[in-house]
Image (cartoon, rainbow, N blue to C red; front, side, top):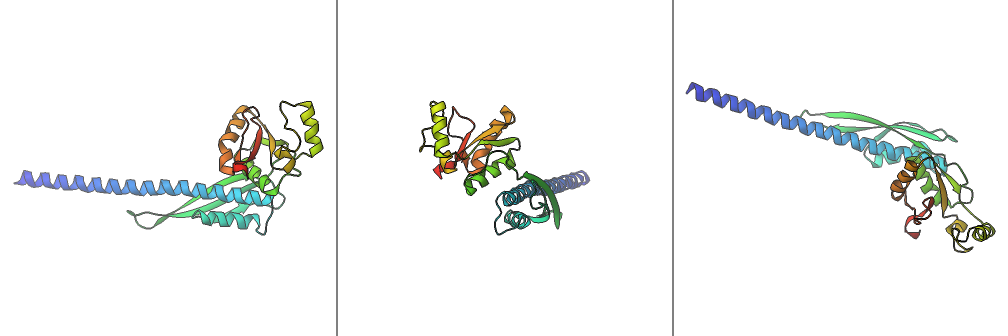
Length: 218
């Protein structure tokens, strides 16, 4: 009887430890998920502030960062986004509930975005420029080589490179809705192609991997 009782105690203790371990793993999973969500909120806040620096609206960069942090379930702690600046750094925090241990854990994450595009951006449509700024924030080492073109400029390019440049009247460059980008390296170009859809952009021409337009024919 004593042995049977001892075995029962051991089994009960083992089951209890297993339950505690499972609960702790659940809390660790909650923290890991909270860290990922907080980082996503920080990225969104930094990008929103950077876009405000490129194309100012009624919001300040800090207000935009605060709004997007809140939309992603976090709170803005700090935004280094001076007017006229190029680099944005934000810090956000999020409270993560701990079901087993009780209470919450505060998770903080920072993110950085670059507002400057660089290159020939004059004449581009503001909303298209905003999408390019989104891509620039995700892929730092790129710039605009060629943006808006007049009809005369497009005609000249077509005469010089008829197999490459579209005839005048048939290029989105003339509408301020296309850009030819420069990349710091082949890997930067590949990253730009991967990130373009997240910013509402597309590289539609396989023979011109630098040519970018709004996605969906917007």
